[in-house]
Length: 237
Ligand SMILES: [Zn+2]
Ligand SMILES: [Zn+2]
Image 1 (cartoon, rainbow, N blue to C red):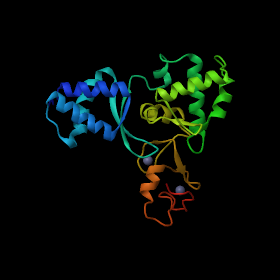
Image 2 (image 1 turned 30 degrees about the vertical axis):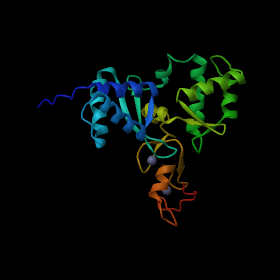
Image 3 (image 1 turned 120 degrees about the horizontal axis):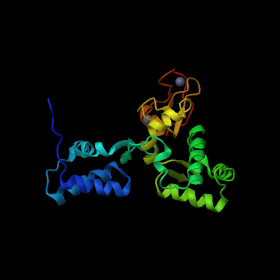
Image 4 (image 1 turned 90 degrees about the vertical axis):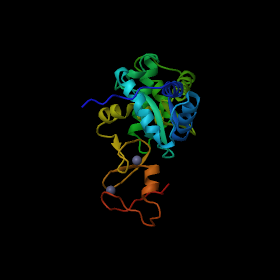
């Protein structure tokens, strides 16, 4: 039984072009864009059909090893859509865009973030690494400039001088991170996606995203670990 994939219309092409130029979009923004693209191209529009619309695009993207993926922001739990490259599963995706020592700095930053308790690396720790790179050392000014580029390119996010992985980066590199950091990178106990910014049970070690913690423990006065039932010792976001 052969099912023909639905063909892309101008609306699909327009949607893809805009998403391509942004790299990642929040769900609300993507829904608005979906509507606008259908109106401009005068094709059928239904508010609740964005995921079908995206599936049609994904069927066409498959031979190019690209995919529009749906994921969640670790900060606010909101849905995002990102265009990701499936061809390469490692940091080699970034290889064509950055110099060798910039990539080394990114890897070191990723190590710091993933090995940390809360999913953040301080700029001080990152700048210390920059001074010890094997490929080519970076001065402080230069390293700060490179970090800014990683933020602009949506690989890193910065908050008060602390760096974490951008939602786009997590959506693109989830599989790579889970296999490269097998012993430390964990999936969220609630939504089963990779958890970088998270709370971890001190007894059994399970991790939960902050928005997932908030949703799960909503209205509970004495929250307990869903796995081992020990007291959950953190402030509930
Ligand atoms: Zn989660
Ligand atoms: Zn536990």
